[in-house]
Structures are given as structure tokens and as C-alpha cells.
Picture 1 (tube, rainbow, N blue to C red):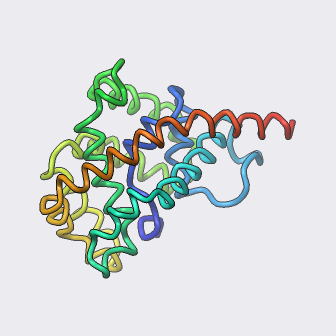
Picture 2 (picture 1 turned 180 degrees about the horizontal axis):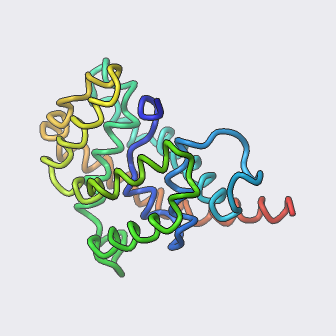
Length: 211
């Protein structure tokens, strides 16, 4: 099941993507699509988004601030940090949205993203298509705005597989360490925002060299 090893920072992946339906779809597919890029399963634009997603995940895993957030989790939950901490970080992206996307309000952004994804979601693998449609229908991106929404999200995710039951009430960790997690996010995310355009240019150059 994809959720057992997936990342859950959907808002961040979408905010970092290019403003096109294909890029935003690709930036959600990194946990669903296996194998090397540039074959005929997807368009070049979707593949670029998938490769970008993979880079963002690797950057996140190796960043000292994200690792400090992971280490705040109890030992038994650290294997799920890619779900728990990433959801926490989307909460802080909500909180600091105007800093990272000053030209567009968050509500307008989410509405735009939903429309874009609905126009291309049929290109996704079946499990990804189902997840994206559910994300839109249940308004996951808006849920991340509050602690209550984070709690609801984690409880819902925990019910999708027996192996995830231990994350059921992990929102308490966010509440107990709110300022510390926020400081980690604010150390981490600005660096990621600056790095992604450079990596995107490299991805595009790599693709062009294969033509």
C-alpha cells in the first residue's frame, strides 16, 4: 500500500511545482510511479514533475532541520516521519503561506490546483487517480490549516492500513512541540524553495539532452 512509505506533504509539492496541470500532477505522482523517467507512460512535462518530486523528497530526507523534527518523534514513530512530519510541515506552510506565495492567496491557490488536477487526473495510475480525487473531494489541502485538521488527517491516514495505526493520535506531538517544529520548518523550507528552480532547470536540460 502506497501510504506505508509515502510522503504526505501534498501542499508543499503542489506549491513548488510549475503552474501547469501536468507539472502539478507529476509533482503528486512521485510516490505512485516507479522506474526511470522519460518513457512513454507520461508526457515529458509530467515526468519532469515526477523527477522534481523525487528530488524534493531526497532533499527533505537529508536536511538537518527535517531530521531534527523526525527525532522529536518517539522511536516507534520515526519510521513514519515521511507521513507525520510532512503533514506537520504542510500545517506550517499554511501558516506562512503569504511569505512563500505572496502573489496568490491560499484559498485561490487550492481552488486553482483542484481545477488543474481534475483536468489531467485521468492520466494518473488508478491508485493515484483515486487518491487525488479523494484529496480534492475531502479538501485535504484546506484541512491542513488547523491542528484539528491535522489531527483529522492523521487519524484518517492511520485507518488505511493496520501498520499505520500507531500514528492515530500523533497530532499531540505537534501540539506539545509547536514552536520547535515551526522553527525547523522555517530553517528548512526557504532553502528548498530556493533550490527547486535550479534543480528544475537541470531536469529540463537532462531531458533535452535525451532528445
